[in-house]
Image (cartoon, rainbow, N blue to C red; front, side, top):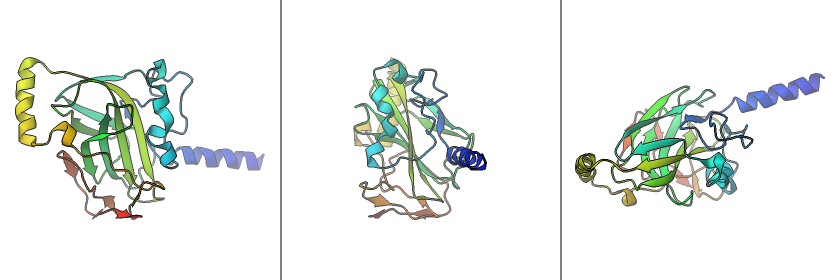
Length: 228
């Protein structure tokens, strides 16, 4: 019995050792009312390797009730994500990205360098003014500051809608000032997975090689990734 209790405690500790996005609710998350019997009780854990990228297999539910959209965002609108409870491994760097091809490619919406995630934390971002409309996959990815060198990713099904004519004119001006069209934004940065080709040292917040035009950098100790 002692072995059983110890094993259970170890498993419980492992489940609580990490953290995940809770809003928008990821596909297969317990917070997602569409998950049904497809709940991933290991959603806090990092990806095991490139075979688990993207989204730890959750995108198999796209087009099914479990993969229904959980949020509708207009072009140019102010939004935020919420992180749940767990261990943050002293934060690190995160990226928010959108995919319109069911996860084959992800385009970076925002890069957060340092201080991400925090327990029960909210991170604001703006939907690009020229983001394509339609069904999309929204990704939160994280490379931790301390601990085992890992890569985390949660993905939610969302819908991007067009702005009003007046808003489109205003958003067009904003997009012009940014001087980076959506299709010119960088791809998501993937590291720490065998086959990804990139590694990040422990004790630094990764300085993304291509963070995109929307960046929050609060880090006091950044580090560039290395090819590996």
